[in-house]
Image 1 (cartoon, one colour):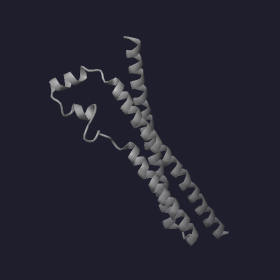
Image 2 (cartoon, rainbow, N blue to C red):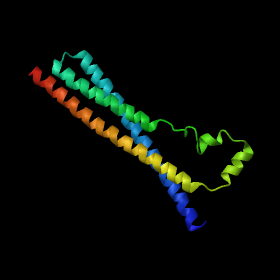
Image 3 (cartoon, one colour):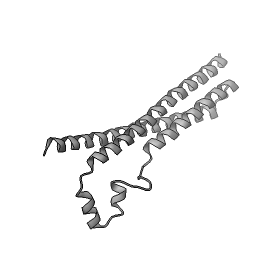
Image 4 (cartoon, helix red, strand yellow):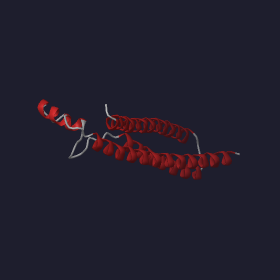
Length: 151
């Protein structure tokens, strides 16, 4: 195996691993977001809160829902649209077409495309995390208002 071949294989494996890590982080944060939304819903439904707590908490819930929407976008499968590459394309080929397609080394293009996908996923994940922080701050303020009103 040549140095170039080894480097291409390593780069390809690395970018695929980054995509997997980003998807895992997004999935865990999505589960956390769902748990927080369920908890907020339970508290807001079972306890009488001041109107200000409902308003601020409602804003926190809206921001948290926006974060969940971004997280769903991160983990949404991308089949390539009108020009599929890799697996989706392979599903449309005959055995001979598949053999001919795989006979050509396209790792450079694949690495570039996967890298762009990884960056897009990572950037969206980052925005979702920022929104989760903002929602958490709003929910903490709402809790503070509720506690302050109870005292």
